[in-house]
Image 1 (cartoon, rainbow, N blue to C red):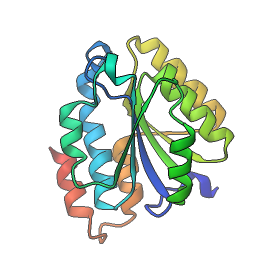
Image 2: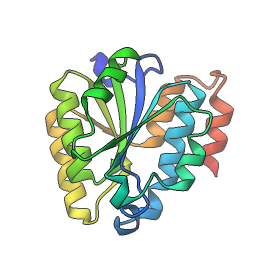
Image 3: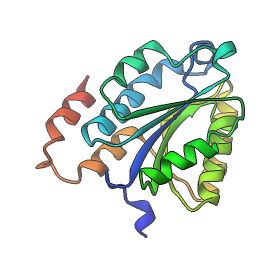
Length: 185
């Protein structure tokens, strides 16, 4: 049962391919940024590592500028990739160095890079928490299908607010006010 509980110790946030030339084509893209901001700030308040991948940035551009702003002053690691799967050997090495056992996942496209990454993380015995409100695809049907597949494989399908409050555990947590105010924005 422990695999269904988030704790800031041993948890990292993995952001997959939120890039300048890919993001504009994503269905419902404007609804993805608030949950993403919640996840990033929650990771920041709890001093969790944040891993960011960029799929072929020479062609798809860099991480969105507003996301880069939110990532300032965070414990952030960036990797470029050409593989669709973001669980690269160098990412795995960093996960191991940080002693991470739980990964919160957000990214695009859900049915390609997010799906392949989640599949390999689960295969390697990590607990995966997919922020369903912070993943997207060009075609919403592909997104929904991929979420179902990842649930069937063992990923915990959740949302940014549930994860933020799961990390908090209690309104007496020193981060409660900051996260509560963030969610009111």
